[in-house]
Image (cartoon, rainbow, N blue to C red; front, side, top):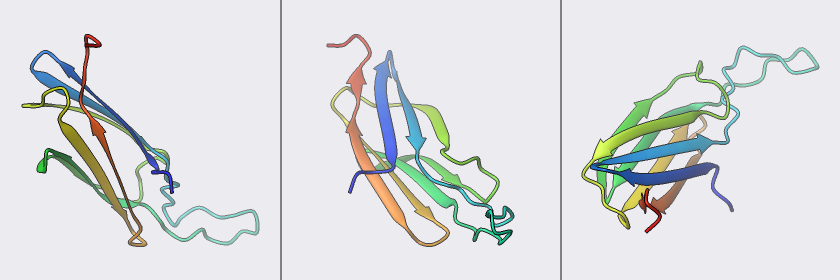
Amino acid sequence: MQSTIHMRAVQIGDQTEVQVLIKHPMDSGFAKDPADQLIPARYIETLKFEHNGKTVFTADWGPMIARQPYVKFSFKGGRPGDTITARWVDSSQAIDSTKTLIEDATGR
């Protein structure tokens, strides 16, 4: 199964910039379907990023985050070729994760 997480990590100077787009409905539980029935809540509760096994960014979310969330952050200490892992857990206990390698911004 293909991951719902699309991630890119680029080394720019001494900073690693990580950009992520997550395909997730982020249903709040307050919206209704065409039959006027409430759509059950289903949203990402925890989002975690690791650099070579060490946590560099964590987010605890609730139902008011927009669907298909986009996240961008930077951290120090990364090097081209290092591994970045992203993992989320949602309110229905579904889990997804993916890994990518840090790229060099110069293209080398």
